[in-house]
Length: 146
Image 1 (tube, one colour):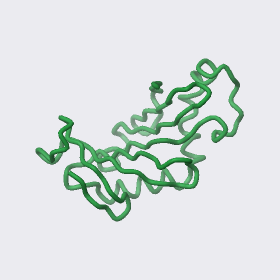
Image 2 (cartoon, helix red, strand yellow; image 1 turned 135 degrees about the vertical axis):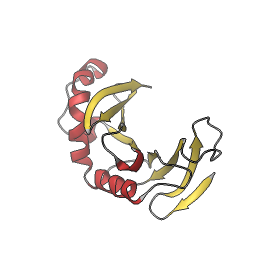
Image 3 (spheres, one colour; image 1 turned 60 degrees about the horizontal axis):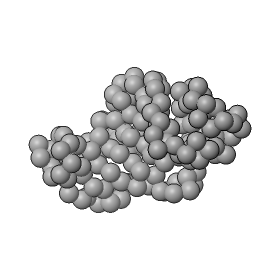
């Protein structure tokens, strides 16, 4: 199921079973893309919301985290730091945009930061994606894949 949204634009609903059907209306998430100046490519936005769509708090959450990409990266860095040198073989330059490319944001249901949410970056020197997973508003672990 697709929907046009005033902020997120075209969104596609993904039911937990992967069918794209709304089902019960609560089991799934929306996918959208947003372009921002700090990212080379459009960001993938995953919104944990029912089939009726994201709520106003989720829009505000996305706007807030994307308004300051430097502050967003600073929140992620503590969880990335232990893996960065190991995976890249280099020392962090101090400028995140030299080494990381912002790729995705996962917005928690109702923008409740006590729930899990995530921020994903591509690290070219590692040829992998680093995804900071937040729980209770704090970065808890880094998922590395690619």
